[in-house]
Image 1 (cartoon, helix red, strand yellow):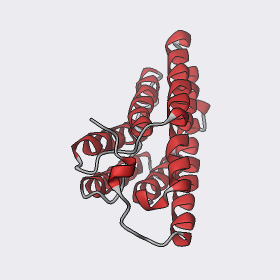
Image 2 (cartoon, rainbow, N blue to C red):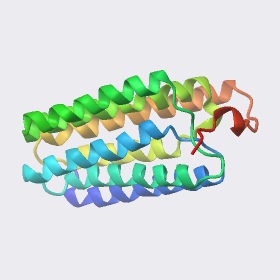
Image 3 (cartoon, rainbow, N blue to C red):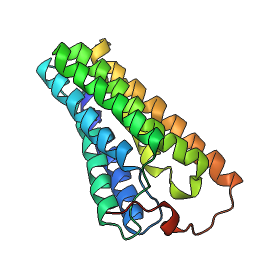
Image 4 (cartoon, rainbow, N blue to C red):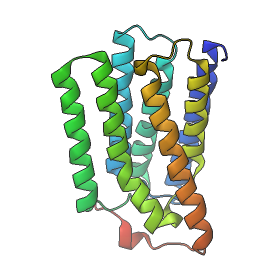
Length: 205
């Protein structure tokens, strides 16, 4: 185990990864799925509030960083000239299921259930981006997911007490990051890099 203060390092790495991804978005190198990134901002912040309410302490910084990063990316996606990934039925279904998980948190009003619901919401919200990374890897970059993996692992190593409310979300974020980064790296190698047409995938503002 490492000092709990290392969570600040993990948070910094996560935010740096998000900032890099946001810059790539502004440059038109990536096209974020706004359903994913909106919910990836919203769900972790709910988990953060739940952990603070339960007196978790420094490990809660992990969720704060995880929530703020996607918020920056979402803003960048609306500001980018290339726009953002077009929303389809699959995205809406996943987004709707994610919202239901968040509503359950408000119904339960319990810190542990809130973290479980937020984790489920985060997983469901990530499915559209995982699908996009598989079908169109040229619209993604692994940097933000690699940073998320580092943040998750550092947070897990810094835990002083292995309680479900403390480790559920970091484990889920780490596994999600590994999955997304692997898909992007593997699929990206099999797809010859090319400048994709933004007109085919741009969502009208």
